[in-house]
Amino acid sequence: MSKPKSNQTPMTTKAVARIQSSEAKANGGQALPRGFAVRAARAAGNNKNG
Image 1 (tube, rainbow, N blue to C red):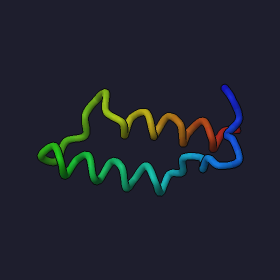
Image 2 (image 1 turned 90 degrees about the vertical axis):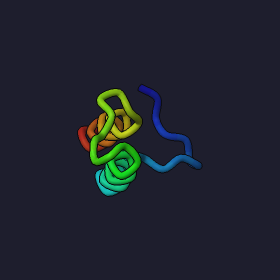
Image 3 (image 1 turned 120 degrees about the vertical axis):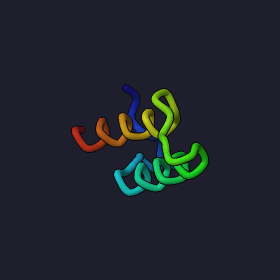
C-alpha cells in the first residue's frame, strides 16, 4: 500500500459512518455489498491498523 500524499486525507471511521448512512438512504435502507461504503470501511480499517 502506498502512503497518503500530503493533499490526501486518510479515511476515518466517522467518514465511513456518513458514507454508509448516505448509501443506505439512497438504496431503501440497505448498503450495497460491493458499494463504496464497503471499500471505505476497508480503507479506514487499514489506516487504523497502520
